[in-house]
Length: 389
Image (cartoon, rainbow, N blue to C red; front, side, top):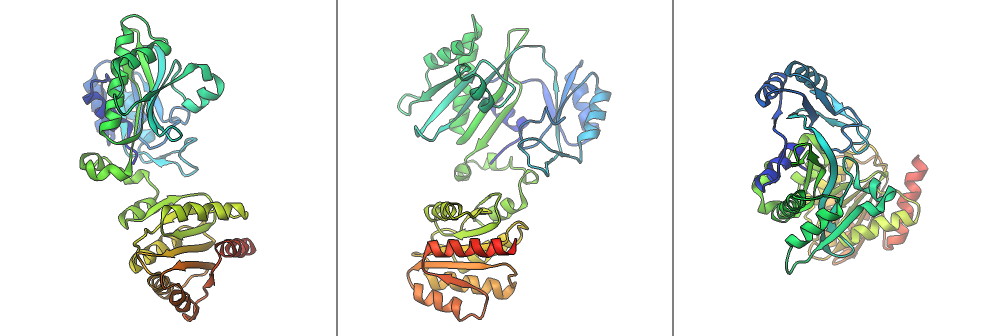
């Protein structure tokens, strides 16, 4: 789950990280009042959306006084911000962050994430900030420094000071840099994040280290432990299908292709996507109905894919274990009888009661193609979707 910049800053502030003076606003009057409450300008007005690259897209603008803050906010509210990360439809702007503009001496990058190859939490620091760390890594890899957080001892003060030195901090600022890094790591761990970053972390002309921007992504699987974080969710920023999948308790990830997939189990799901790509297909999603999927869950999964206009065919790949194949089959038949399907459907089943499941599908009188082989089924749905293109 993503949260907004102002929400991430509020969390980091509780861990001792300095943030600019500012207020989030939901309307024009509030935006102007926020600027007046901060004091003298200049100010920065920042669109609050779940996408990076806001500055290049006009989502971050400077204002000299509260009146200009109001006009900038007027131009943002009710619009959609299109950035390199938002997709062509952009993200709706329903709130803006009004902050003091700081005198900046130097910008840095600081982030904490999980290194999948190492299977460990890593801290990344860079002597440049304000842009994507991937871009810096390609252009100037020597400026990016990474430290591993060992589970036995955690992130040490020595590591914090070492990273601060590697990032180019000097004198008394080294200790401040170590403290900011330690605070970011603690926030990452305590909030069960998959990513926490400050970009840019700025050194002001007064010698302060301030989080000028912040981003935190929370692991969805840990949200049951954090109702206070779950309350920060902004569903306006999410794809409606993602919201609906969450409500239906379906594991769903939207992709760019045209073949809708329904599977039960993450391993089978990944194998299904790989197989479709191997034979020249293009999956539209990852949708795991779960190992214990009920008929209702299958029906709900089916309905979710119907709502996606880019889906031109559906591939159901199920293994009957906790839930038998005949139950899966009845879920498919019920869904199609409720709302007839106008695109190709290929079903491959294996496992408990598989023969009964196939019989239910074949005798339903519905336009369902069944296969025993996963490879043959994948090739068939690809063929049918390409024929309709």
